[in-house]
Image (tube, rainbow, N blue to C red):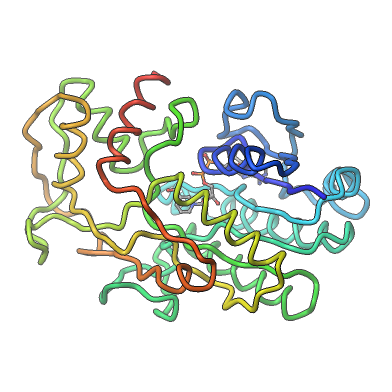
Length: 324
Ligand SMILES: NC(=O)c1ccc[n+]([C@@H]2O[C@H](COP(=O)([O-])OP(=O)(O)OC[C@H]3O[C@@H](n4cnc5c(N)ncnc54)[C@H](O)[C@@H]3O)[C@@H](O)[C@H]2O)c1
């Protein structure tokens, strides 16, 4: 019995692969390696595969791999994840993210694998007005990336209803930090790596808008340490395997918001580099605050985030230094 981790050379998938193996689970990885780093999982078996390719299924390589390793569970991280790119290339995002999800379900049916954990995102909620965000908050994604996450969740729910798999969708909030430096997120796509990049270059971190209706005027988000997030997957896997009755969709956040200024301060403290941030105009489409209510996951998955912003800032800084 083993677990297939798709996108396992990526930032989050690699964290989960290591945690699974540390507790003795067998892990198999598939990844197209377009955005992943093979060295993150140097001593794991990795099969290169484009999961959106229809030849993966109907006796194809994905099905064969799952049968060969007696895969009972799949954790499906593999997806394109850049919001801006998804606006420019919507068809590519729909094809890659949804065809790969469909192929995973077809392959699971063929190989008789039972459990699926799907990587969703807080982007399904779109322009949040009320906090904290509950799972029942209406879904209103504002870009093609978020739309693919909504449809992926719906596909999983339909497959579950059809009796093909048992699964859960985990809606990640703002993922940050690393469990060890070599597993870090090296792309400057999110606030934390973007701020580090500027501090290291001797440039002022940029704040987009300091006139929001928040205590310090800057946007608030719910940052979750990637190690806490990774542990949520193990908790979800255990809950699925144990047959517990589950609601099926969970916010994975801390329930605590941090402002852009607080994040920048934490990173200046962690790095020892102090540069006064530069305030620019608001960016269109940035809600003032997005904070999870993670109580459903805490209750049903028996999981709770334990790391704080300082932990995230410190490990992100150490990771940056180790990988640049
Ligand atoms: N990082 C975040 O802040 C965040 C937040 C919310 C949700 N998520 C979701 O979590 C998942 C993992 O994110 P990550 O940050 O580790 O991303 P990542 O880009 O580091 O890892 C994803 C991996 O999957 C691979 N991949 C993508 N599409 C593929 C395909 N069609 N076939 C095979 N391999 C493919 C990529 O090349 C990469 O190696 C994604 O589904 C993402 O949408 C991430």
